[in-house]
Amino acid sequence: MKLSEKEWRVLDALWDAPEGLSLGAAVEALRPATGWSRNTVLTYLTRMEAKGLVHIDKEETPHRYRAGVDRESCAAEERRGLLERVYQGSAGKLVAAFLKEEKLTAQEREELKQLLDDMEV
Image 1 (spheres, rainbow, N blue to C red):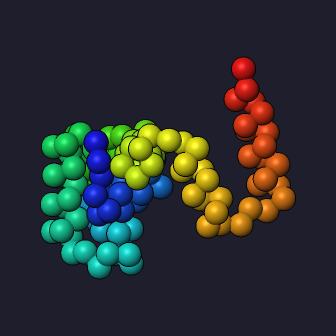
Image 2: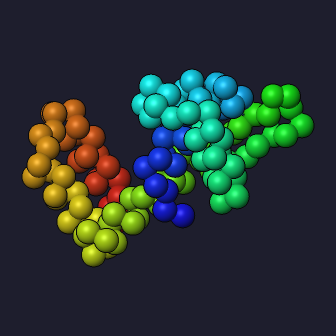
């Protein structure tokens, strides 16, 4: 599932609170970055619940909101989408593009070499 930037923001707040957040706590967590009102946050949470992205524990008072998906699964989906859309499925092209634009430290270069060596069969 492709997440919108706003859905990422909501999930980031929920991932940072594995015990879940009340609506008020979610509003406070999201307000600095978004400026959203209580109604806006509630709208996002309920819409995201319908998509399976958020779990609402309605047996607790106040209700607790938790991420319904894990961060790594969402990140993997984003990586796959980027790889297919931009680099025609070529991981090598993706890595090369990043390496051309960003400088690696000696430690990062060594870690990358080790990763590539570990992939050898």
